[in-house]
Image (cartoon, rainbow, N blue to C red):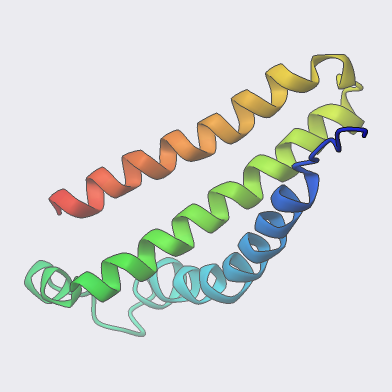
Length: 117
């Protein structure tokens, strides 16, 4: 009996796709509101008390999911940029660990920030 090798590539491509979709649907709206509409005076800037009142558990969870998915999307894209763009395939394990490790580390840091806000 031969032992089957488990490939992690489909797992990471799934998170890449989901993260790209989440970022594509949410980040342009946030950039429009906070980067254009509020600075140009089209909308009133939110007051701190209003923003902190809106940060319920569900809202924090949604923000966290968007951040985590965007980070995993970035990690996968950056990994393949290093592989294909800079021709660094020989450092496969180091690049994979550093890219996904950075995404997971920043995700954990985001959890800490959202829990203490």
